[in-house]
Length: 276
Image 1 (cartoon, one colour):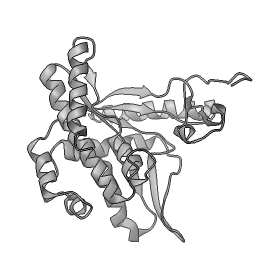
Image 2 (tube, rainbow, N blue to C red):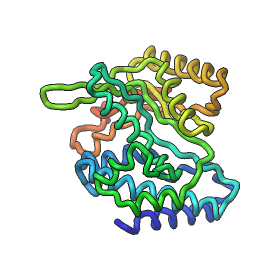
Image 3 (cartoon, rainbow, N blue to C red):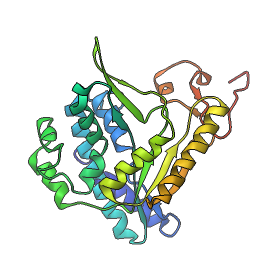
Image 4 (cartoon, rainbow, N blue to C red):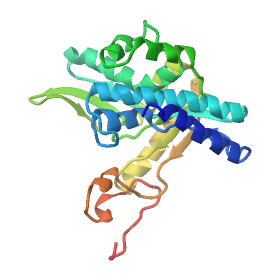
């Protein structure tokens, strides 16, 4: 919907006007890359687009909405803290012939923030790729002219999702997600620090599975943050999410009982009663 960016900003403005003094930190839109992926690339969420052109169309609208929303929030409350939050990944491949694809996927991970902060010049690695997949020169010039600067970058990362390994298979390119060691916290934070030079926080992290596995990730990820801070990298916060078990997203597309989709990722487990 071409009105989406302005509608998003209008909603945010009214929230900020109503709750000024109560809410200090705002994230304009959580995980824009995942939203564009599910809405535009995979067709799982409205508007059910598929392919890279769909991804780019949704991403441009989302990023424009982030810019407009950030401007509206700051007009209402100049003291607010703007936190840009996205899912983060580190791409690798054992196949040297996939080096170009690894670089492309890593750059796409930065796309929402690069657009919002006006980095999409003709020298950007994704400038030509975006034009080939439906963006216009005017679209990209708009972001350069209307850029915003967040106060903080939120990094959402999970050991079962954030390490992406590209491989070839008989069915084409595949993405594997081997369970990552806590070192991935440092690797991802260093990527963002080198690129943006802004303070960061772990805005979401958790592990899935046994108590021992979750505890190991809690200890290991916090130790990784301590190492980053000892090197002068300003990683200033940490959120374990969720506090309790969660219901996986696939539940919305199913008629099976909710217990089948309960993911034990919290600091406390939820155990269903016999009646569910």
